[in-house]
Image 1 (cartoon, rainbow, N blue to C red):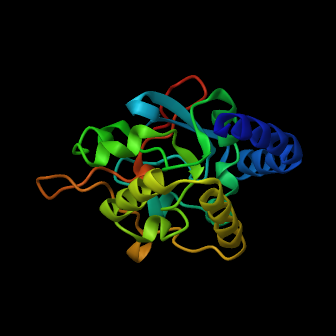
Image 2 (image 1 turned 90 degrees about the horizontal axis):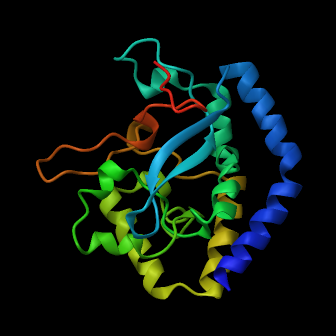
Amino acid sequence: MRRLVDVLVAGVGAVVLAPVMVLVAVLVRWQLGSPVLFRQQRSGLGGREFTIVKFRTMRPSRHNAESDEERDTLLGRRLRAASLDELPQLVNVLRGDMSLIGPRPTLPEQVVHYDRHQRGRLAVRPGITGWAQVNGRNSISWPERIELDLWYIVNRSMLLDLKILWLTARNVISPQGITGAGGVNSGFPLPDGGSTPSHAAAPVLTADGGRIP
């Protein structure tokens, strides 16, 4: 039933929002150049890797030491604030890589550091939005996000999903938790005290899989 709802809602959403996606694509192409889409490997159900698709919100790096803040753009910030950069993930839902609601898909280099408890987060398809997304998003730490996602998996229901959709719509109107403290999204903490790069710091891939320098 959940998969049927995902396909129906994502299909209708893709048709209804097609004009918006075309407009966003034109703006990204105009302001940031090509490629218009951001493609990146993420871990999904059971740890299976897939390619997530989003609208690109940062310009290419001019040098290796350039920070995300330096690469950021006004258009990108507005797209992320309204979650419009996530719209292409409706295709991921239709493909079966993702669900409308579930834990956000994370990088494989983060997943390899999950302990047995945290790997429970991979028991369901990742979502475009989720319980952690409406309860702090990037403003809370990765361990906190994972615990929220695990709570959702144990307690998920139609009523909880409807609540998440309502809170997601509210957050689109009044964005919260887009970035962490100081405008920087923290990476996944490692046992040695370090951390993996945040999603935003990962390389942008072109349509043919090449990297933008």
